[in-house]
Length: 259
Length: 262
Image (cartoon, rainbow over all chains, first blue to last red; front, side, top):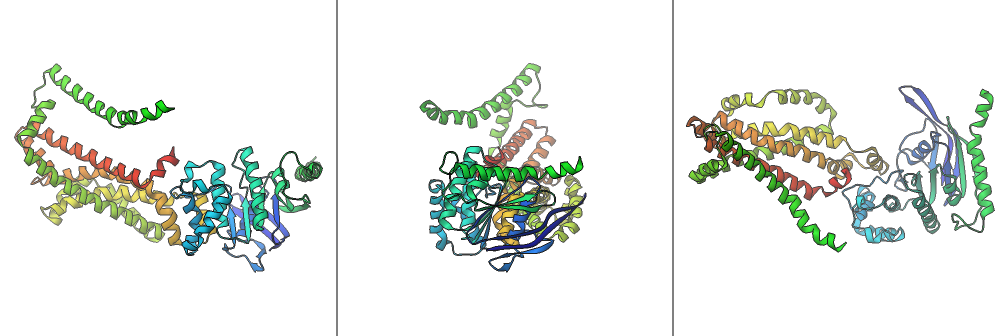
């Protein structure tokens, strides 16, 4: 579904150039859930924005469904770190926003909005304004707004990082359910190992400055997965330990060479 | 819990109507007390009953003149507000136009408007139009500046949503920027609502044929201070009324603004 080939990105700023990503090569299969994990500043958000067509790559290219990405596509939807809802629009009208922007017929999508709101447990809040909702519920609305596009690819940029711990877990489990139900290809940027192990088929570990693909880790644990007690504690522990090692090891060689 | 809900109505009424009324009553009382305590003659400073008596002397005349001033004020305010907002939209659409004309507009705004009043009479004549133009001049700029500020203050995450949906400039403008700017526009409208009355009175003082400004001029010429105070009181009431009207409109149109700013 997604093919990333020889992708590099350099930013020119006032204090010189910053190499954010270097030579990323990665394929994401149809329906796969890929988590991208790395320390802050490793370019994982940049990678996501390039896939979304929000910023162009310096070198290399990204193909989605065989087409080179040059601008945002309607079949690729994005969920941001913050819900970014329009404060004057009700929940339902916020979810309708892409329909309006794409000049689709509202009437044809009303049922879809209703189904998405039911799927995320928001049906009784459809006519509320965003500020009347908790942070977790706002992020659910944001997810519905992305899903109304019926995307082939769902890009998520640390969508739960602004929420409290329990809400994060709740939403992660819910996202797993939605992914199992819809089979959408998902690229999920996070810095939480726990979230990556719960959700992903594979985890792409990025090293920092410049961001390079350090390792692709398969998470072969059957779904549905759960936090806490479950039948696959050992596999979860092993995968988490491996990811920990990779993320921590990222800085060890540099320390060794420096000392 | 039940106590709170039954209490909410009266408590709110007390808070929104009772306290303001009490404040006004106290101020009037202190004003009156000072006049009695220091034995001030009504030629210098009339007591509340003197002002009331002056109003009762010529109620028809005063209300008629108040109507004239109110008309000048509201027509000028409406033209200035719509014009200011429209020019702000034009500036948001074209940075070239903004760069070219903004310094000019800022310079014109820096000229004390009161100094323009005699010129407006020369240019437009001894008529209501000249007075309306004065009000427009005062109202235009605050609405222009606040609308521009609102249109350019859209947060990055909302811009990014629009970008990721490939929204056109117009779509972003209509569906996001305009609505986002509304609370700021109302800040400008509130400032302009007070300036509108000032503009109308300046124009009436320069050309005192009609309106409450002319009442102030003629009553001070005949040393009728209570009548001047009656006119001033009507002006104050008119200004407060216009201000609260704009505030009520704001609550109606942008109920979400207070919720997200607190």
